[in-house]
Image (cartoon, rainbow, N blue to C red; front, side, top):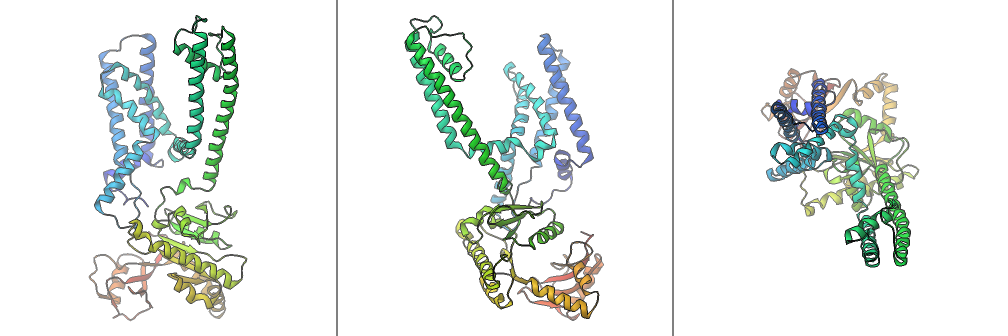
Length: 501
């Protein structure tokens, strides 16, 4: 989850820089685009005409650069780091998150282009004035495709994943160019007027290897023709090698995208759904409706489920193996849901669920060895198939165990005995209409206080109705007496309008 949402001027500047739905941003982008086009036109005009621009034009150009500098610093200022709210972070660690986020932003291709376009402002060297043309590339920032799906970042990651292959390929090229250049220079330097220096031989070797063949230099000796023949064949082989390496890179990257690992690189405070069954789509849809800003990750073996909602990310792996849990960044997850395995006997399904829960708890217990400190334990909710295995799942470490079949059966029986019950429960457990919610007692209320005082204070602040308590130890007390004490650490259960945030 992002760092606390900025307020005041920083929030306005952040929306002006990054929020495409913010109307002033559209006007700001249009203004910046006009300045870039004007500046680029001025550079091209005076470069072609070779005329000396007037002094006022130089001052205007510097003023435009100053405006670009202010925009660059504003973008750097509003960068928000991804800080997990479930972890305890010291001031130095928070500072590190801020510095790392800003450094990462400054090293993005578009930010580097921005910086290069600003360099002429800090130097009087004429050579650096040529960098002014770089500002034309800043127009790329105005396209949403580059904001939400930065191709440079994805391409760089694809190349990094095959670093060894590229080292081997470029080494082959280097060795071939070196040997070919030296060989051609040795056999041709005395008999060929076009080969007077090693640089001439280097030029001819590169031209021959790349199959360009300008024809400006032709071997004059039989040995030179042999070298040329070898280099021609080597050029075809090297082209094939590079084609294979590029294919490997792109295929590997496409597989990486398919598993959505790219999108997991900065996910924090996410909900991890371990396993998948027919109830999975409804669970994901409800999670997305309850908290649209929270990431949902489905972690299961095999390919991505065909019925996986677009609001969730699928990661392929085995949730019963601790080493695999880092794939979904379980260390910074807010909660985990373990679904029952489909197509298995009830006891076998619950056994697999218990193993997943135990693996998660074992992984969590070892976080201290990795110097990861959580503010609160990972909340684990497990789906139960056989009521006799309830205690087993609790013993494995599940915070809450939900027997979906029993809840459905009870609801059907109650709706038959008390018509309308199913409709009421459906609304209370859905994201729309009236909802059941749980939170801390109202801020500013001195605790301990009576349940009646808490209820009055909550109703005073909005359309809320307090119906119960959850004690610090986990005990649930519904419809308590008015004089029931509410202490620090207790949470309140209340009804609220789902349309009011």
